[in-house]
Length: 279
Image (cartoon, rainbow, N blue to C red; front, side):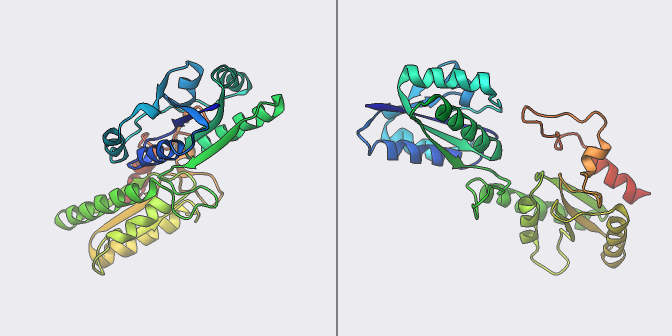
């Protein structure tokens, strides 16, 4: 007999619990899996041995969980190094865990790879599975990732509302949208357009470098034509030299546990773009 563990990592989404329920229901079909542990707060929960026996959940509880947003098991942004992974594998050996299901995005996929590689190095028989989840929709070989659709719908609804506000109080409105290296969420804002003069009138994504002169010229053209302008721009938009605007602007830019520059929440990008437009 062998045991399995499943955990959720990174930012929660509207459907990450549906993926969790999928693992639980499929594991129930395999009698060779004795226990299916749910690790509370991802790899941190594994190291601390904070587990829930997911095979004890009722059908009603699973149905409720599948429809619930956020992460039922809790999440974490820990980035396991070699020492961390050694602790994870120690727990796996202690609990006879042979199957590791990790639900998350790019950083979570990398964590899954590291743990699996270390297991191979020490000769521990482990099967590691990465289950895709990201609102950015930027995972390789994944056409549309669970989590993207719900986030894209939110962006569309937000831009539709902003466009109506902009019609009532004309001016230049800049919406900075999540997307470090991928512009899928920002591109989805185009679905907010129902009429020819609906916003967003300008959409900028990280995949296409944007110089400040071109940006100002395009804003000016739209404003002269419509008397207003709604702009959707990815947080990771890059200048013509390849560096992100936000990284250039933010002094001593903060980085998360995975080394990523904190592009969201600083307000630097929106403030800079707004100041240039006003000038």
